[in-house]
Length: 152
Image 1 (cartoon, one colour):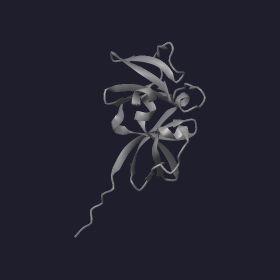
Image 2 (cartoon, rainbow, N blue to C red):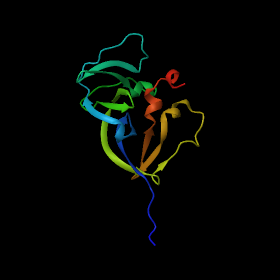
Image 3 (cartoon, rainbow, N blue to C red):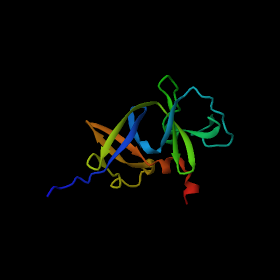
Image 4 (cartoon, rainbow, N blue to C red):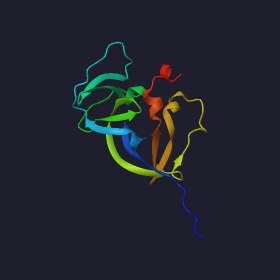
């Protein structure tokens, strides 16, 4: 009798903010665009909400993950990208420093962060992935893009 491997493998898009690598589940990504689009500022929004873009006739809010995570403001260059994600009926653009690659992580190469409690910045994290000596921080997109007031 053969034992079946029940380890679930998930694909993540790896991107960079400063010197750190982050991963988001590939099935939540609609498209990736270069940062040369015009972003229209929306008044009275938090600093991390950079504005909105018109992508193929759809108005999409754009967030700076750097500012959302308390880092310095975005420095746009030829590597800067906007990752367009879809969460149920919500579409949002996330500005990142660069997009690296797509990786596969399974239950053996990922760890929960539930053992680290109390840190406000950790509320956006789903866990960490370990790949060839690298640590990839896995984001919980729902907690990153849905305002806390709306989630309650």
